[in-house]
Image 1 (cartoon, rainbow, N blue to C red):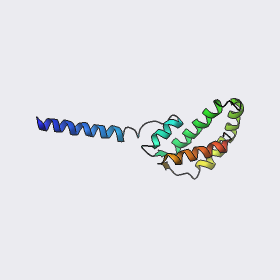
Image 2: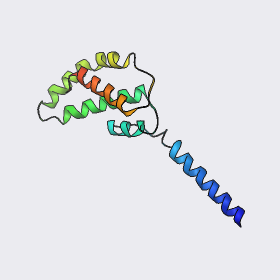
Image 3: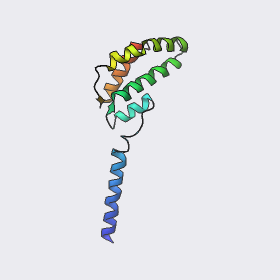
Image 4: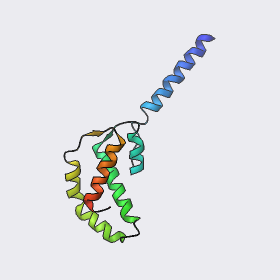
Length: 115
């Protein structure tokens, strides 16, 4: 009976370790906030950071009370490709710190003209 309980405890601990370590790696990044949450536990790729920065820029354009969203989105569309190549061209393949991701997103926002 003790061996069965021990085996059950080991199995449960293994399952818990798997779900906390490996299940979060496959979590999709669909917003800037999800990106920041993911980078706290696992490294994120350059493509995930690029997508998160684009999501943030789009969100800030559509939610800005200062500038009209159509004006902001037009400016964003004009500069998007150039800024992606400037900011992400020589960027590392992965990011493992939240402050790195925030800094890259800020540089991208500034480049596309969304402050």
